[in-house]
Length: 233
Image 1 (spheres, rainbow, N blue to C red):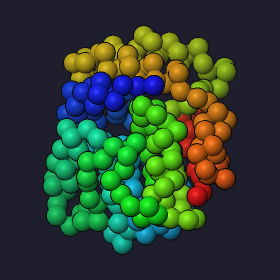
Image 2 (image 1 turned 45 degrees about the vertical axis):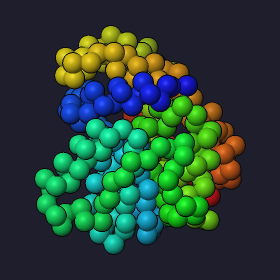
Image 3 (image 1 turned 135 degrees about the vertical axis):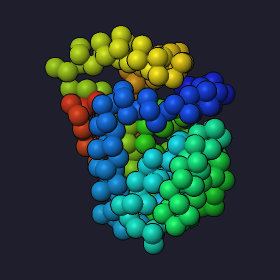
């Protein structure tokens, strides 16, 4: 499992170039992935959403746009430089644009929140960075109200026919391009490792079920390289 100190330091180093690298490395398709996430959340009509591992705030802002200002959105991350970038973007958008979005520091393994305090929890491309996924999933369940939903948007294992092409991209292309953009090639070697070692859709669904979620569905996207898992408390 990832070392939280090393992960925090790594994201702190790349925070200012994180968004640019994401757009470039995904070819912009990360925007579509977030839209799929927001559409799924919208169907549950939450009054409150906790966005864990919010990073620079892209998911929190997308939720605000998709759900409307009446939905309260709390973005939480344990890396302060990433939260700083989120705050910069919020200020740049104007005081009223994201008035329903708040950012706070918080560790996904020990959330500084009371039990049953939110209708939905989202975590996009952050679950694989937790030092203890089981503990993190239990924390997400703890803060959800009964009937609330967990949405996990995360890298997964691609369809077999696409696997060789994807492996070549992760090993050869991604770290090189990311190193040029961010100046930190090692951070994206780590990204490659976390993706290749992450559970496939059935295995992650089993982990979520084991954390106390009786209903879990998984939707593959983009040849299976990404999946959206939805669970109900």
